[in-house]
Image (cartoon, rainbow, N blue to C red):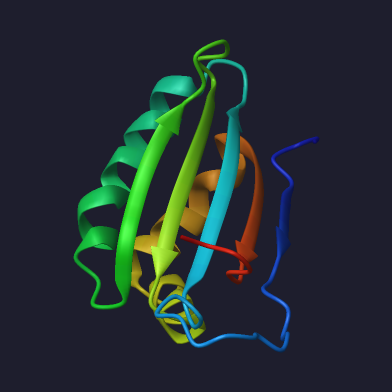
Length: 119
């Protein structure tokens, strides 16, 4: 990862089998590695996303984790009722503010996932 690059892989349209309650849910997992000297600013930015994101109608989980062996690495684990809720999250003012500065604070890799075998 270089220069604050953002790599995102959107959820693919796939046929889902079964009829469990999670069949429409969408999970986003993002890994952030703070740029040199930016870990504190990154943590402040990510902490500021927690309350407004958890308050969104379509959000089921919004959890921030910190790597035990590398304090400059954070993992964000998000769960939404469906892909529309993910899109709504990305349209919020708090996400737009985050998106406008994240590249100056961290390298970021994110994936949005559909459930396959989730208990």
